[in-house]
Length: 349
Image (cartoon, rainbow, N blue to C red):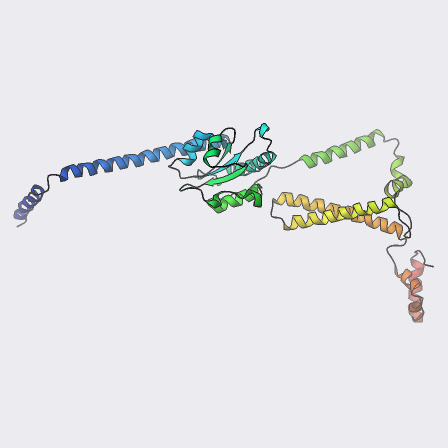
């Protein structure tokens, strides 16, 4: 039964082929050629994308930020295919442009790009580039851009949206703010690492070395260090010794001291409320604390020199309020007298 059924099925298939329309064969051939062409085009796109990514990775291995002209911008940023995000800084760094903001923003941009390049999360999904006005004027004209610096994000698919342009005027161009904006647009989180700044340490070391060298050269004649009168004349030469009078220069000195204390409090508040770099906030905190401690101590010493006897003691209170002392019992008066005998202090008249 099975042997008889097989020839019959072949005959039925032959009849179906026989009754196919004559014009369907060119259509099938065209469809086959179209499938082959689509497959080849897809493979060509994949090869082109691989070449672009390989070239970008090679540039990134040399520099964290690579410069682009008009041709490179159109090939690697505007033209598809593209499966990576590109952060572009449009700037004008040539000296004749006299753009100081561009140089400052470039420093922060360099810090951000270096932090991404040397991080463990570095991959081929995000690249940093730069277009200078003198090298890519046609790019500025193509984007209708008439200001610099400007940061833009070009996503892997589609055109940049309004949020893909960094709001430089409102947020600023700190590397931390740029990293936060990039994380919102690409889901790539970059931890910013700032290079250490040793300028303050070097300046302090030079100052200490200079003072130490001067003291060493005059090591046989150091009496001026122990001269109390000289130090007093230097520090309080414009401060009146009484609380009933005040020099004109003394008013300006007190004004400067209060201004320095206020500045220290402002710096402390800035260090506590700002969201910048932790190292920078720590330095601001130390500077503010130093201003408050030093100048408030100086202001307190001036107050002590004008109001003799400060800080006030219990003995002075007893002298000021004799009725209170008279109302004490005998034992309480004895205790107070013992305290007064042990502690000497200025008396009030």
